[in-house]
Amino acid sequence: MIVTSLIAMLAASALAAFQRVSIRAQASAYFGDVRVFSEGFGRHAQEKGAYPAAGTPGQVPPGMTDYLRESNWQKRSPIGGQYEWIDKDTAVGLGLPYNAAIRVAGCTWTMDQLRLLDGWFDDGNLSTGSFAVADAGTTVYFVIERSSL
Image (cartoon, rainbow, N blue to C red; front, side, top):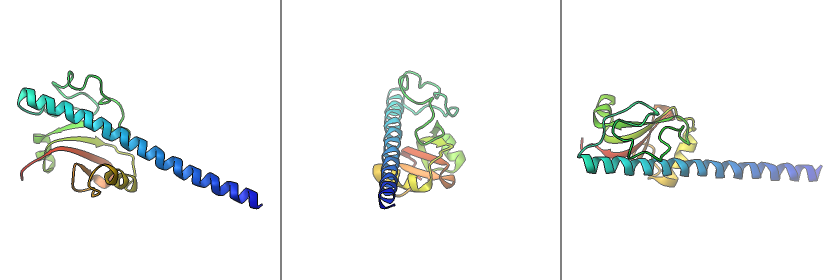
């Protein structure tokens, strides 16, 4: 009975460790994606003089094909949901203080997982910094540029 209890405790701790590693790997993949996307949108803005217009979730925004050619833009994000480009006009319409952001609508992570992600890669606050959460965690924004308002 003691051996069975010890094995059960070891299995439970191994499962918890595996879950932490899995969450960390998905978080790293998400931030790797948005880093690549941010660089592409930044290059577009530098070369064309402005960020591109908003697009459809899961589809490459107009004019961004060359900048996002070898990226995961059209794939499901590591935190669930689809990537979507948010331009200034869209942000204003949504009441968001952004000039440029990448949104994931349909995020499947829990608020606790999102707090961990924010603590690892941003400022640890889900409403400030480059990583922001809305709609009880189902919508996530990676802010490229905040508006001056």
